[in-house]
Image 1 (cartoon, helix red, strand yellow):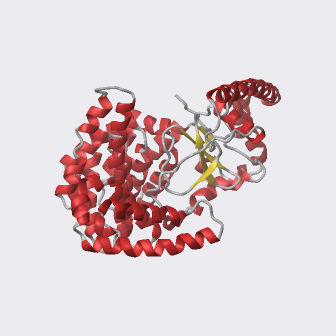
Image 2 (spheres, rainbow, N blue to C red):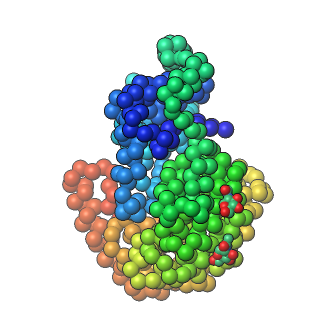
Image 3 (cartoon, helix red, strand yellow):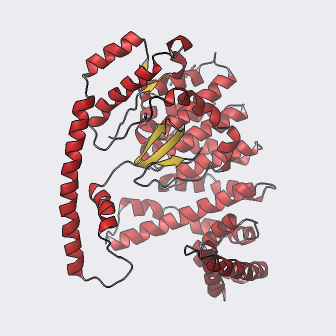
Length: 472
Ligand SMILES: *[C@@H]1O[C@H](CO)[C@@H](O)[C@H](O)[C@H]1NC(C)=O
Ligand SMILES: *[C@@H]1O[C@H](CO)[C@@H](O)[C@H](O)[C@H]1NC(C)=O
């Protein structure tokens, strides 16, 4: 599939004496990359500014402090068609394109599959606005608009093609010629696959120090964000090595193994299947159920979420293995509010995921799609009710912080059908909701006075009020 093998120099294989021809080298690399990327339409360059970039690659590792990594491990990044900087530890959905911007040292992401039509639509919209908010256009209007978009799309794409061809001619050099240049410079060029093999060997070797092992995992995490790379990791047994890393007695090894796994699982079904078969689920749950540093639990929870999302089979196994009990103890531990919020978010995602599967099946009139059958075997809601999650979720609304409350509010909404009676009979939930209503009324009106049209507090207020209505 989309195996954009961005060529990367092995960081260690660049002794200082070879720094001089770096400018030239990067120029070459850029051209080299270009020949690779050409065959693949809209690929952009990983190397952006040859002059300034020479030191950035090595800086990358240093600039990402571990502390920074801990903050938002669970966040899933939503790429658009523009390059956007990826925060440390953010998970990237399948089909995203990740690159390292050597100018800024940041990881950047965008959607991999560029829908040409959509792109052109975006371009054209600037000139000819089609106001989709007013419901006044007729179907004929839409057809006309569509025809115009298509016209424009054709025009634009032929212009683009010409420009690209000119660029090709200017930069194209035969691969053999480039390779010779690289050989003369004595530079080692590695593909992503080779790098991953090297990192796994480093991690798996008994002669590596703890520090080297962690560094290997840390670097590996960068590569497995790309869907193809994560699948390649399977092909040579690398994934199992990382899964076994969860058994390490060293907390840091557990932590970073989970960090790699979370990135590799992210919306990557093949990897998710292999991981469940490789025993990843049990290992992750064992770590969460035992005494561990918070940093370890955070990343392990991240990996667990990544493994469960959009994978009903893993969700079934999770329930069978007593996953809900493990999460319950986690939420009830002291000083783990940050974990509690993430757990609640996971539950929300799992509940809504199943709902969407049902809705989708209904819409497509598909009576027994395999996916839906899988989801129907996930008996999540009864499990949640039996194990006291109605009370736990209601109680979590008392957490400070608007973001935490927002997530709890959404989860309460998703659990309404299951927990309604419980919520109605919970006087402290009623009180909390009433006080949140007052708080958010004030904040929402202040927001309105500031001229904010995207009202964050107005939305929160909306969630609070709709719950109040439902529980009346
Ligand atoms: C990891 O090391 C073990 C034993 O040291 C070895 O049997 C195994 O093949 C190695 N795995 C990989 C993928 O290199
Ligand atoms: C890893 O630990 C689990 C228990 O936590 C144990 O059942 C399993 O055998 C161990 N696996 C390896 C490869 O050491």
